[in-house]
Length: 292
Image (tube, rainbow, N blue to C red):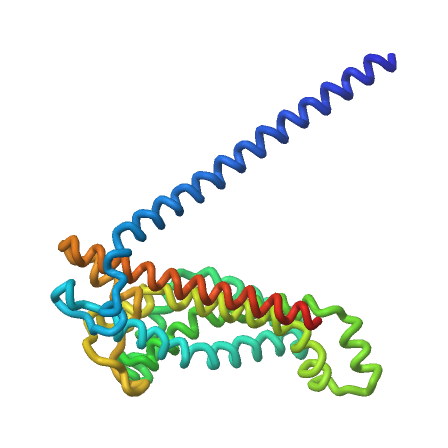
């Protein structure tokens, strides 16, 4: 009887191991397909665009001649838009997260607001472009300006920042808050001197990753009328502008092989900028985690 039970147990264990091996193999194949496709795309882009990575790409304005074309106005436009977006998104997003986590009562209205914010984080970006066109370009009469583009992209990244900041604040142990209250601190003193310093690494990581998503978006800016050919630098927030993804789109749409190579070089520049932003998020997170 014992032998029968042992044999059945062995067969059951062997069956589980076969299932485990099969699932591991399927997961490995699925991961490999994504990695191989990504590597193939990167190799193709680098092989096409490495020859066009020259100083003129950063110093020249767009031109109808590929040999003289650059993306100076697009790079500066992207940086200007980030300079407007970053502080605005940080203040609004982190402020909303602090209110929802620390001050708002946990009732039906709060849960509904939280559900709407989580839903907005997954809305297609083109919807924010339509909203920006209606609200900022037409209703507020900002026109097709850098300020309208920055405000539209702020709406795009706000739900992401709010959700990530809430998660970072929620991860702070309740004991830290209780210790602060026990020492006689007020609510705001507890939030500003205990909760925020403990969660700042997660908050900054979420903000930087949201900014890196915004810098690669094209659809909302196309909707509000960002130009595809800008041969000047914006001097103020109400000037016309372009950004790197739109400039790359303009080059890709041209049939000449030289513009295709120029678009590939622009993609390389954009990828490097995104990698640097993601790297800075990792370094900031590690730096603050060491001090905790």
